[in-house]
Image: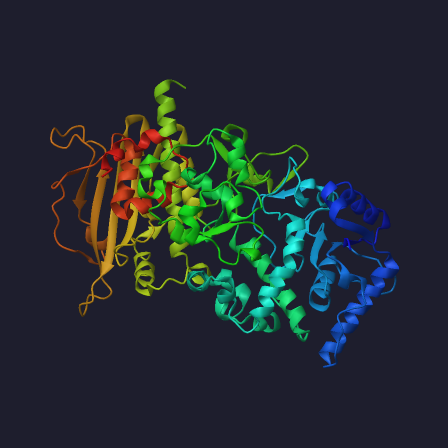
Length: 393
Length: 222
Protein backbone atom coordinates (compact mmCIF):
# COMPACT_ATOMS: atom_id res chain seq x y z
CA UNK A 1 0.00 0.00 0.00
CA UNK A 2 1.33 3.44 -0.91
CA UNK A 3 2.10 5.71 2.00
CA UNK A 4 -0.17 8.66 2.29
CA UNK A 5 0.50 12.37 2.71
CA UNK A 6 -2.43 14.43 3.96
CA UNK A 7 -2.49 18.17 3.30
CA UNK A 8 -4.69 20.80 4.85
CA UNK A 9 -5.05 24.53 4.49
CA UNK A 10 -8.41 26.20 5.04
CA UNK A 11 -7.76 27.97 1.74
CA UNK A 12 -8.64 25.18 -0.69
CA UNK A 13 -6.63 26.72 -3.51
CA UNK A 14 -3.55 26.77 -1.31
CA UNK A 15 -4.11 23.12 -0.33
CA UNK A 16 -4.30 22.10 -3.96
CA UNK A 17 -1.21 24.14 -4.74
CA UNK A 18 0.76 22.33 -2.02
CA UNK A 19 -0.43 19.00 -3.40
CA UNK A 20 0.61 19.98 -6.92
CA UNK A 21 3.99 21.06 -5.68
CA UNK A 22 4.58 17.75 -3.92
CA UNK A 23 3.22 15.76 -6.86
CA UNK A 24 5.69 17.53 -9.12
CA UNK A 25 8.56 15.85 -7.27
CA UNK A 26 9.40 12.42 -8.72
CA UNK A 27 10.35 10.80 -5.41
CA UNK A 28 7.09 11.96 -3.85
CA UNK A 29 5.08 10.48 -6.71
CA UNK A 30 6.99 7.22 -6.39
CA UNK A 31 6.49 6.90 -2.65
CA UNK A 32 3.30 8.64 -1.68
CA UNK A 33 -0.28 9.34 -2.50
CA UNK A 34 -0.92 13.00 -1.70
CA UNK A 35 -4.50 13.79 -0.61
CA UNK A 36 -6.04 17.10 0.32
CA UNK A 37 -8.33 17.16 3.35
CA UNK A 38 -11.56 19.03 2.82
CA UNK A 39 -12.68 21.39 5.55
CA UNK A 40 -15.36 18.88 6.51
CA UNK A 41 -12.72 16.16 6.84
CA UNK A 42 -10.51 18.56 8.75
CA UNK A 43 -13.35 19.18 11.19
CA UNK A 44 -13.74 15.42 11.68
CA UNK A 45 -10.05 15.09 12.48
CA UNK A 46 -10.12 18.05 14.85
CA UNK A 47 -13.23 16.82 16.65
CA UNK A 48 -11.81 13.32 16.90
CA UNK A 49 -8.50 14.48 18.31
CA UNK A 50 -10.19 16.77 20.83
CA UNK A 51 -12.50 13.99 21.90
CA UNK A 52 -9.54 11.69 22.54
CA UNK A 53 -7.85 14.41 24.56
CA UNK A 54 -10.98 14.94 26.60
CA UNK A 55 -11.51 11.24 27.28
CA UNK A 56 -7.93 10.80 28.41
CA UNK A 57 -8.26 13.69 30.82
CA UNK A 58 -11.16 11.99 32.60
CA UNK A 59 -9.48 8.60 32.63
CA UNK A 60 -11.47 6.98 29.86
CA UNK A 61 -9.92 4.60 27.36
CA UNK A 62 -9.09 5.73 23.85
CA UNK A 63 -8.46 3.81 20.64
CA UNK A 64 -6.00 5.54 18.38
CA UNK A 65 -7.58 4.51 15.11
CA UNK A 66 -10.46 5.52 12.91
CA UNK A 67 -9.29 8.98 11.90
CA UNK A 68 -7.66 9.62 8.55
CA UNK A 69 -4.78 11.27 10.31
CA UNK A 70 -3.99 7.98 12.13
CA UNK A 71 -3.00 6.42 8.84
CA UNK A 72 -1.09 9.37 7.42
CA UNK A 73 2.64 8.90 6.93
CA UNK A 74 3.05 12.66 6.72
CA UNK A 75 0.59 15.38 7.63
CA UNK A 76 1.24 18.77 6.05
CA UNK A 77 -0.68 21.66 7.56
CA UNK A 78 -0.65 25.41 7.12
CA UNK A 79 -0.05 27.49 10.24
CA UNK A 80 -2.80 30.02 9.60
CA UNK A 81 -6.16 28.24 9.78
CA UNK A 82 -8.08 31.39 10.72
CA UNK A 83 -11.78 31.14 9.81
CA UNK A 84 -11.44 27.52 8.75
CA UNK A 85 -14.70 26.86 10.58
CA UNK A 86 -17.38 29.44 11.22
CA UNK A 87 -18.24 30.19 14.84
CA UNK A 88 -15.76 27.72 16.19
CA UNK A 89 -12.53 27.79 18.06
CA UNK A 90 -10.03 26.93 15.34
CA UNK A 91 -6.51 25.98 16.32
CA UNK A 92 -3.41 27.19 14.57
CA UNK A 93 -1.47 24.70 12.51
CA UNK A 94 0.95 24.44 15.43
CA UNK A 95 -1.84 23.57 17.86
CA UNK A 96 -3.12 21.01 15.40
CA UNK A 97 0.37 19.49 15.23
CA UNK A 98 0.32 19.17 19.01
CA UNK A 99 -3.02 17.36 18.90
CA UNK A 100 -1.92 15.13 16.04
CA UNK A 101 1.36 14.22 17.72
CA UNK A 102 -0.13 13.50 21.14
CA UNK A 103 -3.45 11.93 20.23
CA UNK A 104 -2.98 10.06 16.96
CA UNK A 105 -0.79 7.55 15.18
CA UNK A 106 0.24 10.08 12.56
CA UNK A 107 3.75 9.88 11.12
CA UNK A 108 5.74 13.04 10.45
CA UNK A 109 4.20 16.47 10.92
CA UNK A 110 5.17 19.32 8.61
CA UNK A 111 3.96 22.83 9.43
CA UNK A 112 3.90 25.42 6.68
CA UNK A 113 4.44 29.16 6.97
CA UNK A 114 4.75 29.29 10.75
CA UNK A 115 8.05 31.18 10.68
CA UNK A 116 7.67 33.02 7.38
CA UNK A 117 5.00 34.85 5.46
CA UNK A 118 2.82 33.13 2.90
CA UNK A 119 4.78 32.29 -0.26
CA UNK A 120 8.11 33.49 1.09
CA UNK A 121 11.15 31.31 0.47
CA UNK A 122 13.18 31.97 3.60
CA UNK A 123 16.57 30.71 4.70
CA UNK A 124 17.11 31.22 8.42
CA UNK A 125 20.73 32.31 8.76
CA UNK A 126 20.62 31.97 12.53
CA UNK A 127 20.55 28.17 12.11
CA UNK A 128 18.57 27.95 15.32
CA UNK A 129 15.84 25.38 15.04
CA UNK A 130 12.36 25.60 16.48
CA UNK A 131 12.35 22.99 19.26
CA UNK A 132 9.27 24.61 20.74
CA UNK A 133 7.26 23.51 17.73
CA UNK A 134 5.54 20.12 17.70
CA UNK A 135 5.96 19.96 13.94
CA UNK A 136 8.81 17.67 12.96
CA UNK A 137 9.69 20.20 10.28
CA UNK A 138 8.77 23.83 9.70
CA UNK A 139 9.13 25.10 6.15
CA UNK A 140 7.48 27.66 3.90
CA UNK A 141 4.61 26.68 1.64
CA UNK A 142 6.78 27.27 -1.40
CA UNK A 143 9.42 24.95 -0.02
CA UNK A 144 7.23 21.87 0.33
CA UNK A 145 7.73 21.19 -3.38
CA UNK A 146 11.51 21.66 -3.26
CA UNK A 147 12.96 18.39 -4.60
CA UNK A 148 15.90 18.76 -2.21
CA UNK A 149 13.54 18.23 0.70
CA UNK A 150 12.62 14.84 -0.71
CA UNK A 151 16.12 13.53 -1.41
CA UNK A 152 16.58 14.90 -4.92
CA UNK A 153 18.95 17.53 -6.19
CA UNK A 154 18.11 21.18 -5.88
CA UNK A 155 20.04 24.43 -5.97
CA UNK A 156 18.53 25.73 -2.72
CA UNK A 157 18.53 23.05 -0.06
CA UNK A 158 19.18 24.03 3.57
CA UNK A 159 21.43 21.54 5.33
CA UNK A 160 19.17 21.68 8.37
CA UNK A 161 16.41 19.97 6.38
CA UNK A 162 16.22 16.21 6.69
CA UNK A 163 15.62 13.97 3.71
CA UNK A 164 11.90 13.85 4.39
CA UNK A 165 11.37 10.41 2.89
CA UNK A 166 14.12 8.86 5.00
CA UNK A 167 12.90 10.75 8.06
CA UNK A 168 9.39 9.44 7.55
CA UNK A 169 10.62 5.90 7.08
CA UNK A 170 12.86 6.03 10.15
CA UNK A 171 10.18 7.47 12.40
CA UNK A 172 8.86 4.02 13.23
CA UNK A 173 12.40 2.87 14.14
CA UNK A 174 12.79 5.88 16.42
CA UNK A 175 9.46 5.08 18.03
CA UNK A 176 10.55 1.50 18.66
CA UNK A 177 13.78 2.69 20.32
CA UNK A 178 11.79 4.98 22.60
CA UNK A 179 9.19 2.31 23.34
CA UNK A 180 11.92 -0.08 24.46
CA UNK A 181 13.52 2.64 26.56
CA UNK A 182 10.40 4.14 28.12
CA UNK A 183 11.58 3.53 31.67
CA UNK A 184 15.21 4.53 31.01
CA UNK A 185 16.94 7.92 31.16
CA UNK A 186 16.89 9.73 27.82
CA UNK A 187 20.67 10.20 27.79
CA UNK A 188 21.08 6.42 28.20
CA UNK A 189 18.68 5.74 25.34
CA UNK A 190 20.62 8.17 23.18
CA UNK A 191 24.00 6.78 24.26
CA UNK A 192 24.97 10.26 25.41
CA UNK A 193 25.25 9.78 29.18
CA UNK A 194 28.67 11.36 29.64
CA UNK A 195 27.96 14.11 27.19
CA UNK A 196 24.65 15.06 28.78
CA UNK A 197 26.46 15.49 32.10
CA UNK A 198 28.54 18.35 30.73
CA UNK A 199 25.96 20.03 28.49
CA UNK A 200 24.77 23.43 29.64
CA UNK A 201 21.47 23.52 31.45
CA UNK A 202 19.87 25.71 28.80
CA UNK A 203 20.37 22.85 26.37
CA UNK A 204 19.33 19.94 28.57
CA UNK A 205 16.41 21.73 30.21
CA UNK A 206 14.36 20.75 27.14
CA UNK A 207 14.54 17.19 28.46
CA UNK A 208 13.13 18.03 31.89
CA UNK A 209 14.27 19.07 35.32
CA UNK A 210 16.73 16.20 35.55
CA UNK A 211 18.19 16.85 32.09
CA UNK A 212 19.51 13.68 30.46
CA UNK A 213 18.59 11.64 33.53
CA UNK A 214 14.90 12.23 32.89
CA UNK A 215 13.14 8.96 32.07
CA UNK A 216 11.64 8.85 28.59
CA UNK A 217 8.15 8.35 30.01
CA UNK A 218 8.54 11.28 32.40
CA UNK A 219 9.92 13.47 29.64
CA UNK A 220 6.64 13.06 27.79
CA UNK A 221 4.34 13.15 30.81
CA UNK A 222 5.98 15.78 33.00
CA UNK A 223 8.49 17.96 31.17
CA UNK A 224 7.58 21.27 29.57
CA UNK A 225 8.53 19.79 26.21
CA UNK A 226 5.95 17.00 26.37
CA UNK A 227 2.25 16.94 27.12
CA UNK A 228 0.78 20.32 27.94
CA UNK A 229 -1.31 21.38 30.91
CA UNK A 230 -3.46 18.66 32.38
CA UNK A 231 -3.23 16.37 29.37
CA UNK A 232 -2.84 12.74 30.35
CA UNK A 233 -0.36 10.31 28.79
CA UNK A 234 -2.01 8.23 26.07
CA UNK A 235 -0.92 4.64 25.34
CA UNK A 236 2.73 3.58 25.63
CA UNK A 237 2.91 3.46 21.84
CA UNK A 238 1.78 7.09 21.53
CA UNK A 239 4.06 8.19 24.39
CA UNK A 240 6.94 6.60 22.47
CA UNK A 241 5.90 8.45 19.28
CA UNK A 242 5.84 11.74 21.16
CA UNK A 243 9.27 11.03 22.63
CA UNK A 244 10.69 9.97 19.24
CA UNK A 245 9.49 13.18 17.64
CA UNK A 246 10.41 15.58 20.43
CA UNK A 247 13.86 14.10 21.10
CA UNK A 248 14.67 14.12 17.38
CA UNK A 249 13.59 17.74 17.13
CA UNK A 250 15.89 18.54 20.07
CA UNK A 251 18.81 16.68 18.56
CA UNK A 252 18.36 18.19 15.10
CA UNK A 253 17.31 21.67 16.11
CA UNK A 254 19.23 22.37 19.31
CA UNK A 255 22.14 19.97 19.70
CA UNK A 256 23.37 19.52 16.12
CA UNK A 257 23.49 23.08 14.70
CA UNK A 258 26.40 24.17 16.92
CA UNK A 259 28.58 21.34 15.57
CA UNK A 260 30.38 21.40 18.91
CA UNK A 261 28.68 18.40 20.53
CA UNK A 262 27.84 16.34 17.48
CA UNK A 263 29.54 16.97 14.16
CA UNK A 264 28.25 15.83 10.80
CA UNK A 265 30.09 14.84 7.63
CA UNK A 266 30.59 18.11 5.74
CA UNK A 267 31.59 20.07 8.83
CA UNK A 268 33.93 17.27 9.89
CA UNK A 269 35.88 17.18 6.62
CA UNK A 270 35.95 20.98 6.59
CA UNK A 271 37.81 20.86 9.90
CA UNK A 272 39.84 17.73 9.19
CA UNK A 273 40.31 17.39 5.41
CA UNK A 274 42.49 14.31 5.89
CA UNK A 275 39.31 12.37 6.74
CA UNK A 276 37.97 12.89 3.23
CA UNK A 277 37.98 9.51 1.49
CA UNK A 278 37.85 10.75 -2.10
CA UNK A 279 40.04 12.93 -4.25
CA UNK A 280 40.40 16.35 -2.53
CA UNK A 281 40.56 18.16 -5.88
CA UNK A 282 37.16 16.80 -6.87
CA UNK A 283 34.18 18.73 -5.40
CA UNK A 284 32.09 15.57 -5.74
CA UNK A 285 34.21 13.92 -3.03
CA UNK A 286 33.35 16.73 -0.66
CA UNK A 287 29.68 16.83 -1.63
CA UNK A 288 29.34 13.12 -0.94
CA UNK A 289 29.93 13.87 2.75
CA UNK A 290 26.76 15.98 2.74
CA UNK A 291 24.47 13.07 2.01
CA UNK A 292 22.12 11.10 4.20
CA UNK A 293 23.54 7.60 3.78
CA UNK A 294 25.15 5.38 6.37
CA UNK A 295 28.57 6.06 7.87
CA UNK A 296 30.37 3.98 5.28
CA UNK A 297 28.52 5.54 2.36
CA UNK A 298 29.31 9.21 2.70
CA UNK A 299 32.93 9.41 1.61
CA UNK A 300 34.59 9.72 5.01
CA UNK A 301 37.51 7.65 6.29
CA UNK A 302 35.37 6.32 9.08
CA UNK A 303 37.70 3.54 10.24
CA UNK A 304 39.89 6.08 12.04
CA UNK A 305 36.99 7.61 13.91
CA UNK A 306 34.54 4.74 14.22
CA UNK A 307 34.63 4.76 18.00
CA UNK A 308 33.23 8.29 18.00
CA UNK A 309 30.12 7.55 15.95
CA UNK A 310 26.87 8.67 17.50
CA UNK A 311 25.53 5.33 18.66
CA UNK A 312 21.84 5.65 18.05
CA UNK A 313 22.18 7.17 14.62
CA UNK A 314 18.62 6.16 13.73
CA UNK A 315 17.56 9.11 15.87
CA UNK A 316 19.40 11.56 13.63
CA UNK A 317 18.72 12.32 10.00
CA UNK A 318 22.40 12.04 9.07
CA UNK A 319 25.59 10.42 10.36
CA UNK A 320 27.29 12.31 13.17
CA UNK A 321 30.23 11.88 15.51
CA UNK A 322 30.93 12.99 19.07
CA UNK A 323 33.07 16.08 18.56
CA UNK A 324 34.81 16.36 21.92
CA UNK A 325 36.61 12.98 22.00
CA UNK A 326 37.07 12.95 18.24
CA UNK A 327 38.79 16.34 18.30
CA UNK A 328 41.45 14.84 20.58
CA UNK A 329 42.09 11.71 18.54
CA UNK A 330 45.74 11.39 17.56
CA UNK A 331 44.69 9.15 14.70
CA UNK A 332 43.76 12.34 12.87
CA UNK A 333 46.66 14.07 11.13
CA UNK A 334 45.39 17.58 11.86
CA UNK A 335 45.19 16.80 15.59
CA UNK A 336 48.56 15.10 15.88
CA UNK A 337 50.34 17.72 13.76
CA UNK A 338 48.07 20.74 13.40
CA UNK A 339 50.77 22.59 11.49
CA UNK A 340 50.55 20.01 8.71
CA UNK A 341 47.00 20.94 7.81
CA UNK A 342 46.26 22.27 4.36
CA UNK A 343 44.05 25.16 3.48
CA UNK A 344 40.96 24.22 1.49
CA UNK A 345 39.59 26.17 -1.43
CA UNK A 346 36.04 24.96 -0.86
CA UNK A 347 33.51 25.98 1.76
CA UNK A 348 30.38 24.17 2.83
CA UNK A 349 27.29 26.29 2.21
CA UNK A 350 24.47 25.84 4.71
CA UNK A 351 21.88 26.98 2.16
CA UNK A 352 22.78 24.57 -0.64
CA UNK A 353 24.17 21.60 1.31
CA UNK A 354 27.08 21.63 -1.09
CA UNK A 355 30.70 22.72 -1.21
CA UNK A 356 31.54 25.71 -3.39
CA UNK A 357 34.68 27.76 -4.01
CA UNK A 358 35.13 30.03 -1.00
CA UNK A 359 35.13 33.05 -3.24
CA UNK A 360 31.53 32.26 -4.25
CA UNK A 361 30.26 32.11 -0.66
CA UNK A 362 29.76 34.65 2.06
CA UNK A 363 31.18 33.90 5.49
CA UNK A 364 28.98 34.87 8.43
CA UNK A 365 28.42 34.16 12.11
CA UNK A 366 25.28 32.16 12.81
CA UNK A 367 23.39 32.85 16.01
CA UNK A 368 24.53 29.76 17.88
CA UNK A 369 25.86 29.09 21.37
CA UNK A 370 28.93 27.46 19.92
CA UNK A 371 32.53 28.46 19.20
CA UNK A 372 32.02 26.95 15.74
CA UNK A 373 29.45 29.47 14.58
CA UNK A 374 31.32 30.69 11.51
CA UNK A 375 29.38 29.41 8.51
CA UNK A 376 28.99 30.02 4.78
CA UNK A 377 26.07 30.77 2.51
CA UNK A 378 26.01 30.68 -1.28
CA UNK A 379 23.06 33.07 -1.55
CA UNK A 380 20.74 31.52 -4.07
CA UNK A 381 18.66 33.83 -6.20
CA UNK A 382 14.98 34.02 -5.18
CA UNK A 383 15.64 33.13 -1.54
CA UNK A 384 15.02 35.53 1.35
CA UNK A 385 17.94 35.38 3.76
CA UNK A 386 16.86 36.26 7.31
CA UNK A 387 17.86 38.08 9.39
CA UNK A 388 19.49 39.96 6.55
CA UNK A 389 21.83 41.94 8.80
CA UNK A 390 23.72 38.75 9.61
CA UNK A 391 25.28 38.97 6.17
CA UNK A 392 26.57 42.51 6.65
CA UNK A 393 30.35 42.59 6.76
CA UNK B 1 46.77 48.37 -1.93
CA UNK B 2 50.43 47.51 -2.45
CA UNK B 3 51.96 44.12 -1.72
CA UNK B 4 53.04 45.11 1.79
CA UNK B 5 49.61 46.44 2.71
CA UNK B 6 48.04 43.33 1.26
CA UNK B 7 50.30 41.16 3.34
CA UNK B 8 49.51 43.16 6.49
CA UNK B 9 45.78 42.84 5.78
CA UNK B 10 46.18 39.10 5.24
CA UNK B 11 48.03 38.80 8.57
CA UNK B 12 45.44 40.97 10.29
CA UNK B 13 42.57 38.81 9.04
CA UNK B 14 44.35 35.65 10.16
CA UNK B 15 45.13 37.05 13.61
CA UNK B 16 41.58 38.37 13.98
CA UNK B 17 40.17 34.95 13.20
CA UNK B 18 42.42 33.28 15.77
CA UNK B 19 41.74 35.82 18.51
CA UNK B 20 38.02 35.74 17.80
CA UNK B 21 37.98 31.96 17.98
CA UNK B 22 39.84 31.99 21.30
CA UNK B 23 37.27 34.46 22.54
CA UNK B 24 34.36 32.27 21.42
CA UNK B 25 35.84 29.11 22.95
CA UNK B 26 36.39 30.98 26.17
CA UNK B 27 32.90 32.48 26.16
CA UNK B 28 31.46 29.06 25.53
CA UNK B 29 33.26 27.61 28.53
CA UNK B 30 33.11 30.38 31.09
CA UNK B 31 29.62 31.66 30.34
CA UNK B 32 27.47 32.23 33.36
CA UNK B 33 24.08 30.91 34.40
CA UNK B 34 22.29 28.14 32.58
CA UNK B 35 24.46 28.47 29.49
CA UNK B 36 27.53 27.30 31.36
CA UNK B 37 28.72 23.76 30.66
CA UNK B 38 28.24 21.60 33.71
CA UNK B 39 31.92 21.10 34.16
CA UNK B 40 33.24 18.92 36.94
CA UNK B 41 35.89 21.45 37.90
CA UNK B 42 33.70 23.81 39.87
CA UNK B 43 36.71 25.36 41.54
CA UNK B 44 38.05 26.65 38.21
CA UNK B 45 34.66 28.17 37.45
CA UNK B 46 34.61 29.80 40.86
CA UNK B 47 38.14 31.15 40.39
CA UNK B 48 37.17 32.55 37.01
CA UNK B 49 34.20 34.35 38.51
CA UNK B 50 36.55 35.97 40.99
CA UNK B 51 39.15 36.93 38.38
CA UNK B 52 36.42 38.68 36.39
CA UNK B 53 36.06 41.12 39.25
CA UNK B 54 39.41 42.75 38.52
CA UNK B 55 40.31 41.55 35.02
CA UNK B 56 37.21 42.71 33.21
CA UNK B 57 36.35 40.48 30.24
CA UNK B 58 35.59 41.96 26.84
CA UNK B 59 31.93 41.69 25.97
CA UNK B 60 30.87 40.31 22.59
CA UNK B 61 30.29 43.83 21.29
CA UNK B 62 33.66 45.02 22.55
CA UNK B 63 35.33 42.06 20.92
CA UNK B 64 33.80 42.99 17.58
CA UNK B 65 34.92 46.57 18.11
CA UNK B 66 38.42 45.44 18.96
CA UNK B 67 38.75 43.63 15.64
CA UNK B 68 37.02 46.30 13.54
CA UNK B 69 38.25 49.52 15.12
CA UNK B 70 41.60 49.74 13.39
CA UNK B 71 41.16 47.16 10.64
CA UNK B 72 42.02 49.72 8.02
CA UNK B 73 45.47 50.11 9.60
CA UNK B 74 45.75 46.40 10.44
CA UNK B 75 46.21 47.09 14.13
CA UNK B 76 44.69 45.47 17.23
CA UNK B 77 45.03 46.83 20.72
CA UNK B 78 43.02 46.00 23.80
CA UNK B 79 42.22 48.77 26.24
CA UNK B 80 44.13 48.99 29.53
CA UNK B 81 41.20 47.76 31.56
CA UNK B 82 39.75 45.10 29.30
CA UNK B 83 40.99 41.55 28.77
CA UNK B 84 40.32 38.72 26.40
CA UNK B 85 39.53 35.88 28.77
CA UNK B 86 41.04 32.72 27.42
CA UNK B 87 39.69 29.16 27.49
CA UNK B 88 40.70 27.12 30.55
CA UNK B 89 44.13 25.53 30.66
CA UNK B 90 43.33 21.87 30.45
CA UNK B 91 46.59 20.84 32.12
CA UNK B 92 46.26 23.34 34.97
CA UNK B 93 42.69 24.59 35.16
CA UNK B 94 43.11 26.43 38.45
CA UNK B 95 45.20 29.07 36.73
CA UNK B 96 42.80 31.40 34.94
CA UNK B 97 44.38 32.91 31.80
CA UNK B 98 43.54 36.36 30.47
CA UNK B 99 45.11 38.19 27.57
CA UNK B 100 45.97 41.68 26.41
CA UNK B 101 46.99 42.26 22.82
CA UNK B 102 48.94 44.90 21.00
CA UNK B 103 49.56 44.24 17.31
CA UNK B 104 50.70 46.45 14.47
CA UNK B 105 50.77 44.13 11.49
CA UNK B 106 52.27 46.49 8.86
CA UNK B 107 55.26 46.78 11.18
CA UNK B 108 55.29 43.05 11.95
CA UNK B 109 54.90 43.83 15.63
CA UNK B 110 52.85 41.91 18.19
CA UNK B 111 52.82 41.57 21.94
CA UNK B 112 50.55 39.12 23.77
CA UNK B 113 50.52 39.56 27.51
CA UNK B 114 49.08 36.46 29.15
CA UNK B 115 48.29 36.74 32.84
CA UNK B 116 47.40 33.63 34.81
CA UNK B 117 45.69 33.91 38.17
CA UNK B 118 45.01 31.46 40.91
CA UNK B 119 44.05 31.51 44.59
CA UNK B 120 46.06 30.00 47.42
CA UNK B 121 44.58 27.73 50.05
CA UNK B 122 46.53 29.37 52.89
CA UNK B 123 44.53 31.00 55.65
CA UNK B 124 43.95 34.67 54.94
CA UNK B 125 44.95 34.31 51.28
CA UNK B 126 41.79 32.67 49.95
CA UNK B 127 40.42 35.87 48.51
CA UNK B 128 43.65 37.32 47.18
CA UNK B 129 44.64 36.38 43.67
CA UNK B 130 48.17 35.36 42.86
CA UNK B 131 49.38 35.84 39.35
CA UNK B 132 52.14 35.28 36.88
CA UNK B 133 52.54 36.87 33.46
CA UNK B 134 54.06 35.79 30.14
CA UNK B 135 54.85 38.18 27.30
CA UNK B 136 54.90 36.61 23.85
CA UNK B 137 56.63 39.11 21.59
CA UNK B 138 58.01 39.75 18.15
CA UNK B 139 61.72 40.70 18.13
CA UNK B 140 62.70 43.65 20.27
CA UNK B 141 64.32 45.70 17.55
CA UNK B 142 66.26 48.06 19.78
CA UNK B 143 67.72 45.20 21.78
CA UNK B 144 70.71 43.44 20.27
CA UNK B 145 70.11 40.64 22.75
CA UNK B 146 66.40 39.90 22.20
CA UNK B 147 66.02 40.44 18.48
CA UNK B 148 64.11 37.20 17.97
CA UNK B 149 60.53 36.01 18.65
CA UNK B 150 60.44 35.17 22.32
CA UNK B 151 58.50 34.79 25.56
CA UNK B 152 59.43 36.41 28.87
CA UNK B 153 57.96 36.54 32.34
CA UNK B 154 56.42 39.59 33.89
CA UNK B 155 54.84 40.57 37.20
CA UNK B 156 51.08 40.86 37.18
CA UNK B 157 50.89 44.22 38.90
CA UNK B 158 49.98 42.57 42.16
CA UNK B 159 46.94 40.91 40.74
CA UNK B 160 45.36 44.13 39.77
CA UNK B 161 46.11 45.63 43.12
CA UNK B 162 44.10 43.02 44.96
CA UNK B 163 46.62 40.27 45.45
CA UNK B 164 50.24 39.49 44.89
CA UNK B 165 52.61 37.94 42.38
CA UNK B 166 53.47 34.30 42.99
CA UNK B 167 57.05 35.45 43.57
CA UNK B 168 59.07 38.43 42.42
CA UNK B 169 59.79 37.61 38.80
CA UNK B 170 62.69 38.51 36.53
CA UNK B 171 61.16 40.35 33.60
CA UNK B 172 63.86 40.11 30.93
CA UNK B 173 65.43 36.72 31.44
CA UNK B 174 64.96 34.01 30.58
CA UNK B 175 64.01 35.27 27.13
CA UNK B 176 62.90 32.03 25.55
CA UNK B 177 63.04 31.87 21.76
CA UNK B 178 59.91 30.79 19.90
CA UNK B 179 59.32 29.02 16.60
CA UNK B 180 57.79 32.05 14.92
CA UNK B 181 58.77 34.32 12.08
CA UNK B 182 56.01 36.93 12.11
CA UNK B 183 53.05 37.95 14.34
CA UNK B 184 50.56 35.27 13.24
CA UNK B 185 52.96 32.39 13.78
CA UNK B 186 53.76 34.01 17.14
CA UNK B 187 50.05 33.80 17.97
CA UNK B 188 50.10 30.10 17.11
CA UNK B 189 53.15 29.61 19.34
CA UNK B 190 51.31 31.20 22.22
CA UNK B 191 48.39 28.80 21.71
CA UNK B 192 50.65 25.72 21.52
CA UNK B 193 52.41 26.89 24.69
CA UNK B 194 49.15 27.21 26.59
CA UNK B 195 47.04 24.43 25.10
CA UNK B 196 49.39 21.98 23.39
CA UNK B 197 48.96 20.56 19.92
CA UNK B 198 45.42 19.32 20.55
CA UNK B 199 44.43 22.74 21.74
CA UNK B 200 45.97 24.34 18.67
CA UNK B 201 44.16 21.85 16.47
CA UNK B 202 40.87 22.74 18.12
CA UNK B 203 41.36 26.49 17.78
CA UNK B 204 42.36 26.47 14.13
CA UNK B 205 40.19 23.57 12.91
CA UNK B 206 37.59 25.74 11.18
CA UNK B 207 39.71 28.81 10.39
CA UNK B 208 41.28 27.63 7.12
CA UNK B 209 44.48 29.57 7.79
CA UNK B 210 47.16 30.02 5.18
CA UNK B 211 49.62 27.13 5.71
CA UNK B 212 52.54 29.57 5.53
CA UNK B 213 51.77 30.59 9.10
CA UNK B 214 52.55 27.06 10.27
CA UNK B 215 55.95 26.87 8.60
CA UNK B 216 58.04 27.66 11.73
CA UNK B 217 56.01 25.25 13.86
CA UNK B 218 56.67 22.39 11.45
CA UNK B 219 60.09 22.18 13.03
CA UNK B 220 58.36 20.73 16.08
CA UNK B 221 57.63 17.47 14.24
CA UNK B 222 59.23 14.64 16.15
